[in-house]
Image 1 (cartoon, rainbow, N blue to C red):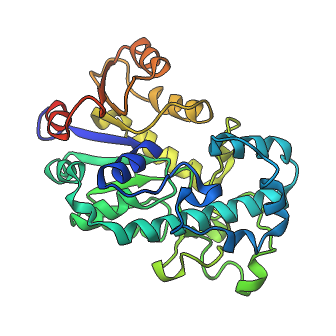
Image 2: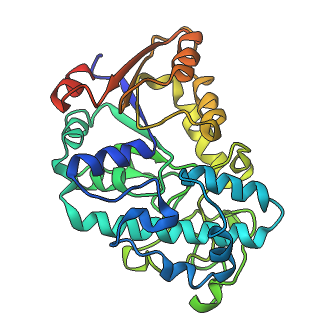
Length: 323
């Protein structure tokens, strides 16, 4: 790859799990409804504020929390109130998760962080479906200037090293402060519809770290669902439009911890369809044990190379040498 070639990183929950496993942090990023299976991530303090939601969650029995949330959305798809409450809870649960993992270890010492540093001139775009801020913290620790488009980070006439697209939202997204005036206690029972953040042309606000455990006015997260309703949300549409305009810049696409789950598949296919068929693009898929055959078939069908790298069978030195 020449020095001017650009890399797109696509990361999912497996990216967070890999970081936690490598550091020996016993917190399960896939289990938000039960406090990530950690006594350190107590989430009942949030559910106690939303008793109607707590009573409903207790009735479900599914080890896959993302599937459970999708079941919830199917059962209550016409109940904007409960859906808003679930988004509020998920935002705060992952905020608690974020604050706890930040206590555990220096993020820049992870081997993959070192690879990012060595390739920072080529990594121009990151597409993340994670609510947490692990990848943002990595870039911060390495001095890489990034921006999440259509948030208050996006400043005019500023050149950024990397753009991070988070179409499923982030724990630190909220409405601009000037949009709605409401007391913190009133927020718990409030309902803001449709995740429409761009009121009067304003971008999403980035919430300060000291406010992570306070309820957001607007829950700017997208819950796991195969319906892909987020494509109707203004800030999500703008993020995708910007990413799509840059797709032909990439010669290497690194997929890390993205399982091509049914609920995310349509979105990912939109990205694939924007790559010019004549372009020689290599896909490197870092996963735990076995490759996703559906993902491999889709990439090969479009005429691109797919290389799977299992973390279970390779040391980090071996993985990074392949990349």
